Amino acid sequence: MSGFDLLIRGGLLVDGTGRPGRPADVGVAAGRLTVLTPGEAPRTGAAEVIDARGRVVAPGFVDVHTHSDGVTLLGPSGGRSALVRASVLQGVTTEICGNCGSSLFPAAPERLAAMRAETRITFGGDVGAYADFAGFAAAQAEVPRANHLASLVGHGTLRAGVLGPVDRPARPDELHTMCALLDASLAQGAAGLSTGLIYTPGSYAGTDEVVALAAVAARHGKPYVTHLRDEMSRVEEALEEAIEISRRSGAALHVSHHKTAGRYAWGRTEQTLPRIAALRAEGMDVTCDVYPYTAGSTALAAMLPPWANDGGVGALTGRLGDPSQRDRMRRAIAEGVPGWENTVGNGGWDRISVACAPRHPQAEGRTIADLAASAGADPLDTVAELLLAEAGEVTIISHSMVEEDVRRVLAAPYAMIGSDGVPKPGGRPHPRWAGTFPRVLGRYVRELGLLRLEEAVHKMTGMAAARFGLTGRGVVRDGAHADLVVFDYATVADRATFTEPLLPPDGIDAVVAAGEVVVRDGEETGARPGRVLAL
Picture 1: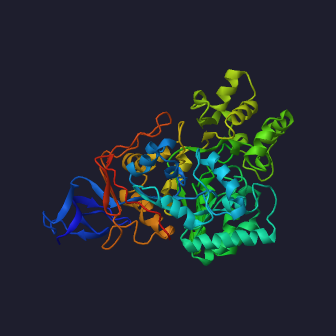
Picture 2: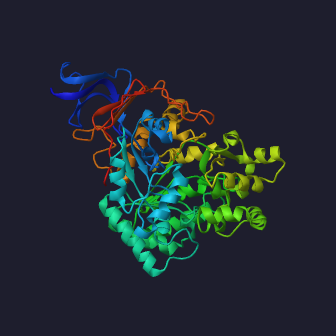
Picture 3: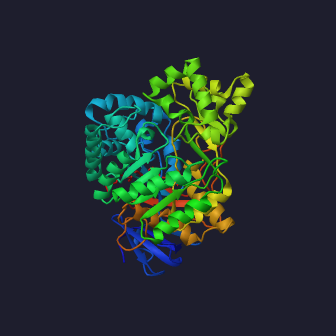
């Protein structure tokens, strides 16, 4: 029992399977785990010993829904340091990016330059665009990281990388190219296919197009992961479309950040969750993820009707400068557009606050309604002027959900945890990027008793790893990868707020990735053993 690189002694092991916690020591050698009965290992049998008495030892958390594709590629001058730290400080050892139809790959060669220009808007800096997963992985490997990264293939990126940001059906030859690009990236190790069917250009696609692409994912045994076409008044219809795509393609279905948002959809988890449960009982492979907040975050441009974004950022800003086009947008929000989610129409500008506007920091933290009232302007005109001044680069926070729905999804036995974090430099990002996992453990497990500790850890680890094919991760057992988190169940809690969104949590004592201690006593050690995972 000697020769361990690291020994974690005296903790309560919650192993990620959902089974009851038990006292155990955990040894690490050459990046792999050995589970020991208390006292089995000699006290001198490790190069380093962590005293975990009074602490929980669990697998490192798997954040199944992030938008962290580009943050490490920005470099220190891009303001990335605090953003990169936030994830690992809350115990996350694997991030899954490429969600909501947006990834940094793939694209046809002739579209790469245009794609790079678009990613500057999305990620707040020059992070590049890549022909395939291999190119993306190679770029990420050049930048040392503390935790691991896996990526889905974004359908919106596929579309933009072949058709461009245009509102029309894909021609058969274009769909064939999209399928070939997807097939190549999945073969290289991408984790699955994602869609964001409220976002352009993904929203321009019909169901048949998505079925064809999901069938490619099915052939690789990888999931179809979807931000539904509507999470508001038409959420049940949108869920049925996702079910149809899964059934026709043969791909397993994973519903991203499941919610029923906007005043016309509050309470509809009482319909959507039983529908998912019934499908599972029938044998369908369907799961979802959730973040523990009643507010979401996205781009301000997504508050506008889909046709406004047809042609990309340049076309959008051209329309925003045209008073007649602004009037058309105003009417679309007031009256609705068939097939469009219409966040503002379902809630109001008073529920939309500015998270990041790099050239207008004085707007950050204020609602659009408040900004408009202060200027004596119509809210749509305020939005248009802000987007024009920022070249389209504005993110927002949407306070669109109710707590009862969040709790129902959290409690669903097939729901795992994802932050939906958007680590973009500047402004006031959503606190979920720094607080999601400790918030679940502190608020919803310890304080409210909504979940058992072992159940919550399973959602954060073993369940997530199984869904996304993270073999040997998400569980603590002999031979598993040495990704671990040690936390104090009595004190673990999120501290991040909407005004101070990157405050690190309390109670996360140590984080281990690939057998190296990357967080000790709540502080980064500087170790960078993380890598891009090919699945």
